[in-house]
Length: 225
Image (cartoon, rainbow, N blue to C red; front, side):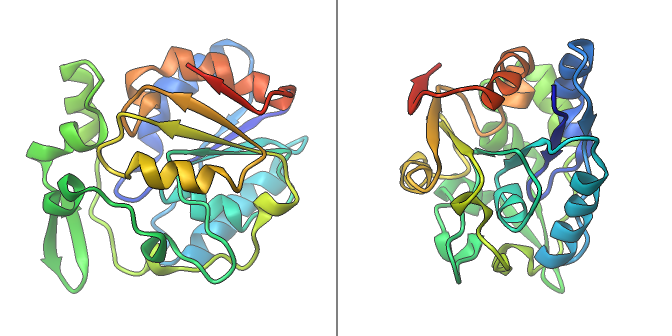
């Protein structure tokens, strides 16, 4: 089958997908996980585009959270998956779409010069509330400071308009309001509803790995986990 490209969100990095990569690789799926933190949305998008272009066949591309803004600007993907992610329309940015919960907003610490980080004591509840405690602590330890500006970036194109896409609503999300996720999901070809936190690749990597390959062939308008 086609490969899978996993695109992380703000404060995260490729290591957060390690559990999911292991599950997919065990199933024989080619997986690529580009690193963002390139300083701007255009730079992040260019880095992911290079990975997509290098795949043997057009891949399924998963964008988590801010990663949705990144994958919106891509070309050459076979299928886009917005995992609790932003789906910007023309002229929109993640910041303009908003939707951050009060919990997330209260957990962001200013470091100076616009750099921020997520309070490590709150990160588990914000991002990984349904994960085992040790796993949530591991994921929280990987979080990185975030330079300013990426969330205000506007994609140059809206690839969800002409590429098959699936939106995954995470109903127990404590980072991005599920209500906003439902609104953005209407821009995609189909919707899945998962009763998980913001980061199911941490809490349920086996279940995510079981679902992703089938999205190349799905024909339903909606489904529930």
